[in-house]
View 1 (cartoon, rainbow, N blue to C red):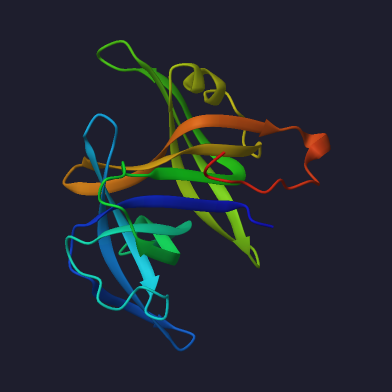
View 2: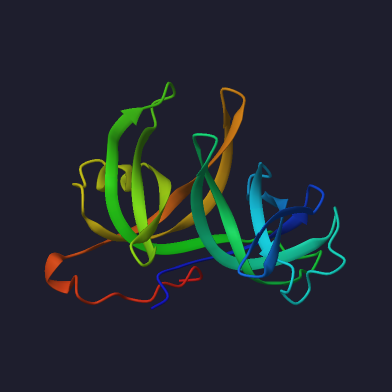
Length: 202
């Protein structure tokens, strides 16, 4: 069951540095700069195993496409959200940057709706994405306008499929990452036994 995936393309914006080792594999990390349609930029952290084809020779300024899934963990008491890469390749310098994420999960926190200073409605909630053996990744999701109305009163435990993009923003000197929701589908309880595959391109 493929219940979460992300495809992003952009330019490597930081040095590729060693992250950690696990199960006899070495992992490295870097930041990927991804432009939005309005030319604003998101800085997205990527973790990649050294044995993934195309890893050797990566450097700042390379334009690449990364396929993977969103992971989260805690470090120094803070939750970190990043892209765990399982495939990468060179990207065409003439193509527009890509940023598309899709996942299936369960609402585990809902902060409801608010109105911004310029009158826009926005809602925020936390979604738990089951990974394996009882482990879940926790992703903050933000919705605007009509999506905000759909999100604002979803109860805890609601099963959802979300399509959107991963974004970065700065708060109190820290760079945080969440998902801006483009489309939200609620899975009714009677269909809960069926887990649809999700496709970030859908």
